[in-house]
Image (cartoon, rainbow, N blue to C red; front, side, top):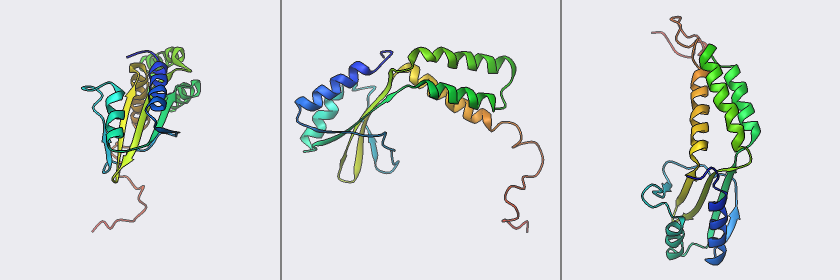
Length: 166
């Protein structure tokens, strides 16, 4: 996948205009597990098939969202890393990897288009490989932030007596 999905975003915008769709430039839509349906971008990577499906269903409104990668996302990740239980060489390695991602600041890291039809939300979602790596590192930092202290062999009194010990 390209370092930036900017070209893809522009192709999608052009195709939406040419196809007569109304384009709503929205925020990322949360995917409800019960009603979300995702296009198989591995087997069918061309977004035009997704739009052709919407067209055949009579859908005229498409929500377009693109995620531009920002420097402050890296800064937030570095701050969370500093506050995590990670130490030593591992911390330095993760921090170095995050700093290298500054090269992608300002690029489009993910694009999604979606539409609603009969109580379901249909999504076409793609992300750049480097953006997926960043999200994976963020997830690891989040997990590492919870290491140490939760399983120290001591009873957990955080519930403050809400449960009976009977």
